[in-house]
Image (cartoon, rainbow over all chains, first blue to last red; front, side, top):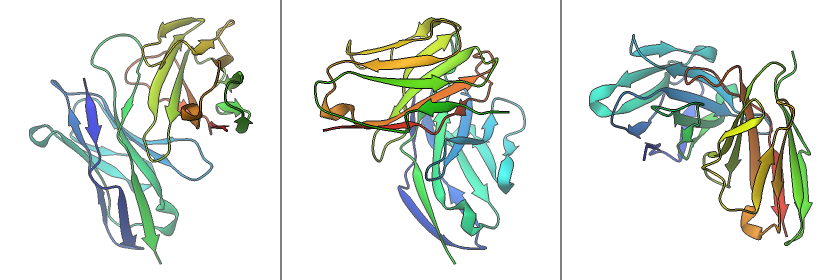
Length: 115
Length: 115
């Protein structure tokens, strides 16, 4: 079965510093990959997604992610973090086949931003 | 336009009781998903509807859980004989047609507490 690993449960960065959140997936082929953000009291919001093509994907709020097949990774990055980026971030993978798009999520990384 | 809405936002019940959780998807979205998010975990897939039919219910944990979408719009997740382990945030998402590349739009969730 497919799985997603987010090795870092908590990450703290200073405002203005760069950020990288790690995501590794277990899959036999190139999956559909997603990053979502969850702020307190808010629903999950899609930051970006990757299906094929250019392995560097741009998303909303200045985020980007790079798909690396050799490392089975899809890490999320941001050059300069803002205090409003403090939230929980989830990596997810979609199914290879079948109808629908039931997502398998990682356990999340809680981001704290120090002012 | 309006996003995905879920009611109630919070539900406290006693062990053994029956609960219903409601999801209003984005208008025109034929695909609807239910997920469950336990504390410290990522969302876990429960069931996927395409129109009125449950196309994939492989994530329902047992037969105490049931969901309907009789008119292809609003969906209700029903839990019988609730147990303390059912306490979690129940998330609903919708997408336009259910394609694997589509964005799922999540509601704010219903926080269920079983005492």
